[in-house]
Figure 1 (cartoon, rainbow, N blue to C red):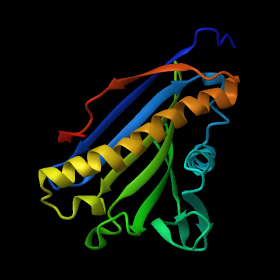
Figure 2: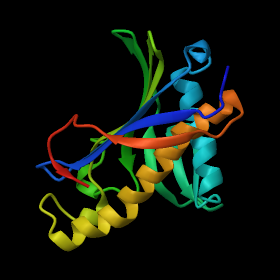
Figure 3: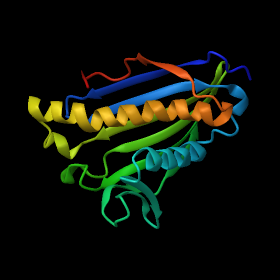
Figure 4: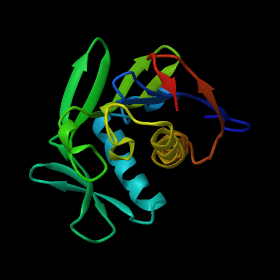
Length: 197
């Protein structure tokens, strides 16, 4: 594969919806010859190892009998916990979804609503890899009617970090198969209505 001057486009949207839940989606299209490698489980496992590396183990994904936990450093304290991964294949899209079920990063009365998904879709132009977060109620927002201060606090901390990690993860997937770190640009998309964050 010719990787000289490779430039990757990464689509992105992050919004705060009317009910104060967060929707975040990022995707890119990778070379089609690697479609078989990019199963949803492969993408998820790569994300876990990448997250652990780039956060210097501040967030350490651990599989448990009950699902997955993002633990803090080498302690048992979990920042987010997820139920057992759910796999599906529908309409040509394969995915694995983790239901957010607890942790100090989610509002306690909104547990079991959030979804974190890794998707793969084989297309004529390549394999589309998508990372999607939906119906997530961050504790930083405090309630279903957060004020401007809390919105900005979330926007410039957790939302910024999630976008940075996820977009660079998608570029890392390209490097994983090509051996070359690509130049990439982020392309805004409009999937869900809400306040852009």
